[in-house]
Length: 133
Image (cartoon, rainbow, N blue to C red):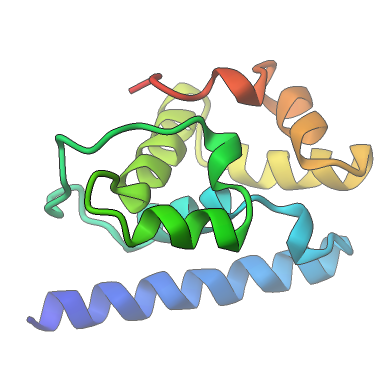
């Protein structure tokens, strides 16, 4: 029970740190897809032994960009959007390194668009992220 409490604090604190970084880079929060924001917080707050719904359906990440989209699937038991977002961030960090998160944000600032910043930082089209794990 204590771990769950600590995990939630770390998760929420990570949101705060990300928001500070966005302010520093002058990127409006609405420019960052919800899956990215939640995925980073889940990744930082996780110990890789959390229990997720491994039978959950996977969505294209562009269907998890806004809070409205996120909330619709977050409450649907067929999906585990926290798991999907976590796995996407974990994949990116494993493929590149921890700096990829910062590089995506910097490239987003430079390009003025998250999808373009993502592609510049990773060389990947964001629409090809689903099913990578």
